[in-house]
Length: 311
Image (cartoon, rainbow, N blue to C red; front, side, top):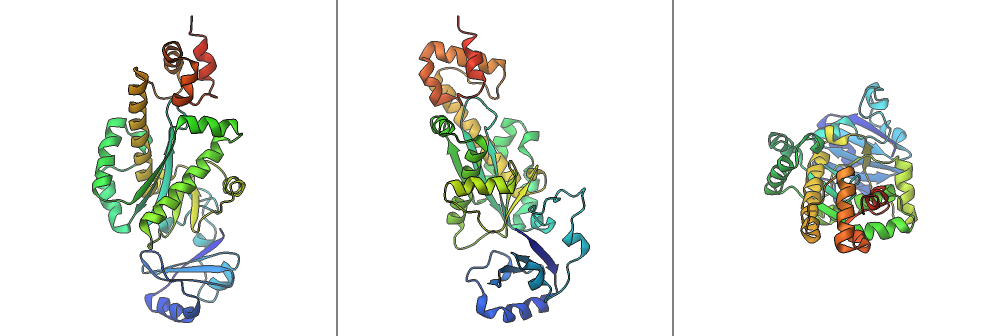
């Protein structure tokens, strides 16, 4: 979504609120003075003085109140927000939501997607608790941090795509990208239901597809993209909400893997290595080929490789 961001003094915010009185929205997001929608433009003014204009007429409407600085209009090429759909840098220090997934590259186990909402006043506490990119942490560390997140009463939602459903969708022609799109979409809707009537200032998705592709996947299922959605690669390095979601998703995936290992009667390795091939072969030998539907993403090359280990 095209946008302009202005930084204005407090007295100007209340003048704007009066000007847009007839088009004010009933439930502005946390930290906002007001939110309005007029002439193809959504306006959200925050107590910090930041005013966000979004929509086809964002430049025209913002022009009534000021001019965006060059840094606001054209992010630096070296900036992590080089995409026009990436979040404004101010969002990282504001109250916002973020989502991430786990299990997509693992042969065994489901895909888990978490979406977390972090208030501005919780950011420092989460960083002190060790919340950061889960890829830089070991699973025991991730679980410890996840417990701290839960104790802080961080609102979050979790969606799990179990293997049987994954395999059904894959045979219907769904790519993993479409699966992840719908999982992120449902996770955010679940979070909004939990938070109602409050709403985040924005939602950051750890980008796995171009926005146009993401929206295309939604349209095929008669769904539409929510408001104030941003896409960013390696988002967990910039957004504490995405980092928290990453930890929650990974913890949920590990717990699901433990349950599957118990059901299988044997340890199921993570990833897609030779050890995974061998474990799949043993599972086929002990429980039959059909059981893979419940444990694995059967279209992965590991299935074919597993049969080579069966004597």
